[in-house]
Image 1 (cartoon, helix red, strand yellow):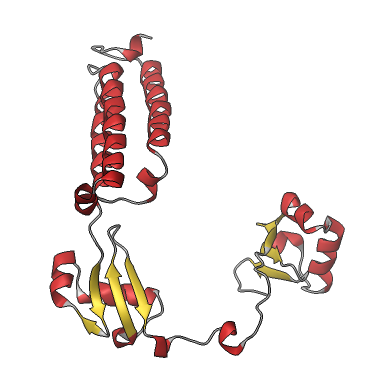
Image 2: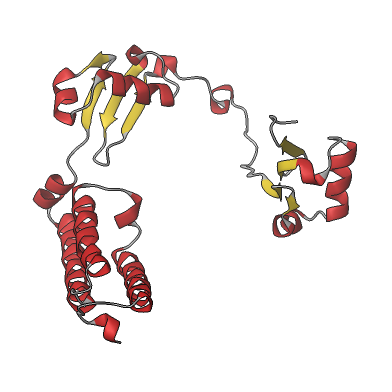
Length: 238
């Protein structure tokens, strides 16, 4: 366990052991902090991520720095982070500091320029995000909000929203998530088994309906109705 303490020099094996121990310890630390700490980066999460990176970098690059001090520091940081999350849940002031209220960037089809400056984003960036949401005209928006995690939520005005099945009193069918049955030229036996079909049936469908061999299939899915959709290498859907 000499690699665990400060040393003037470390052998290659000791460096590897130090990296392995640090990596495993870091996984436990992230697990202890929860999925929230890696799924989105608000003010609190970003600060913790920066501090962890700084703490863990030194013992991995400097043989004279032991792991014990870094691990103790990270444990203290986890406790501090957990206490901060608890404070966010219980205190409105702390919550508003860490998770500020969403800023309206577009209100009833009009840009709210002061909030654009406050969010430090440009009109071009707003337009880019709108295009990603398939919104070509900002005047069609009833509201656009700059969220605390840095994303933008768009809400179209009712007159621009498309009709749904409920508007025509149509009963929608049940949600159906197609099952992957072929992935990169190989049959996904577990997925195929869940559909109640077998390999012989699948190969027959590929050959007789899609005129293709298994090894040429990039992706194939099977829906509840028994329809197989095929994607081939270098082409679109067949």
